Image (cartoon, rainbow, N blue to C red):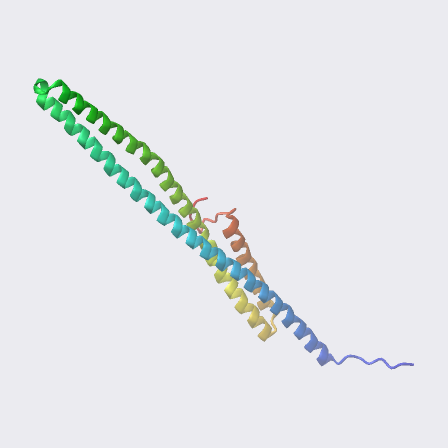
Length: 198
C-alpha cells in the first residue's frame, strides 16, 4: 500500500499568501490602467475646455470688431442726415442725390454688420456651452484619479500586511473611481457635488 504524504501546513499557508499577493498585484495593475484612463480623460477635458474658451474669446473679439464697424457706419449715416438737414434747400439736387446714395450705402453696411454679428454671437455662445460641458466633466476625472491612487496604495499595503479588509477597501475605492471615470467620459449622471451643465 502506497503511503500518502500530507502537505506541510506551513507550505499551504505560504501558498495561500502568495496566491493572495498575486491576485492583489493583478488587481492593482487593473487599477493602474483605469487610473491612466482617468488621467487621459481629465487631460482631454481640460484641453477641450481651454480650446473652447479660446475660441469663444476669439469669437467675442470678432463680434466686438463688427460692433465697432456697425457703429462707425451708423455714425457716418447720422452725420450725413444732419448735413442734409443743415443744408436744407441750399444743397443742389445732384449733391443731395450723392449724399442720399452714400447714406443708403452706410445704412446697408450697418445692417450687414448687424446681421453678421448675430451669427458670430451664436457661435461664441456655442463655444461657451462647449467650454462649460468640458468644465463640468473635469471634476469627475480629478476625483477618480485621487480615489484610484489611494486604492493602489491600499492594495499595496494589503499585500504587505496580508490584510483582506484593507484590500476590500481598496476595491471599493477603485470601483468608485472607475464609475467616476466612466461618468467623466459619458456624463450620464450629474452629482450635486459637481455643478455644471450638460
